View 1: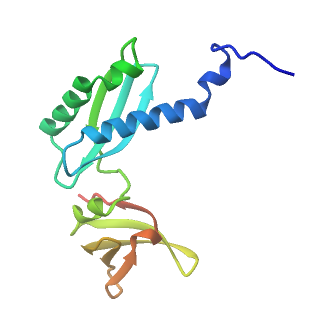
View 2: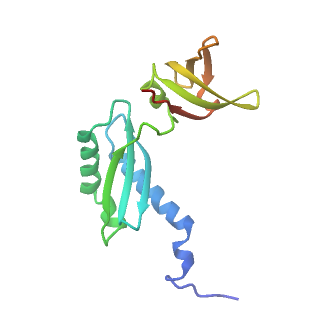
View 3: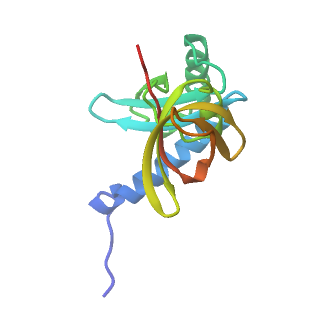
Length: 165
């Protein structure tokens, strides 16, 4: 049985369609970013008619950088094409509580104490340690009561910088 599908049916706006649209927007935005700047997240907020972009960099992200990225995105017309009715663009830096996922994030936090949840020999573990050194695929940590230890970044499930006052 053949069925005619109308454009206003619900499947057109299914999550897969929205995911693909957002992926294309992310790729277009990534192409606009200056060297050493990374796009961590892009989210639509339909309640506020906004697109929220979170960026990070090897160097500290300041207001000048977020403004430069915001202008580049606005001037590119990416959002005009996808949101002809208009959307507000917010570009912000990753917060201090953002999980560490990429080697550059570990590098910029050398010397700080981090919380790590990882897997070793197939068993999960959690620890707090000072981050001493970073290579492309490993981090060197120092726990208070143990010898320095190299941990493959691939074995880290979750890591965050601990803020101590």
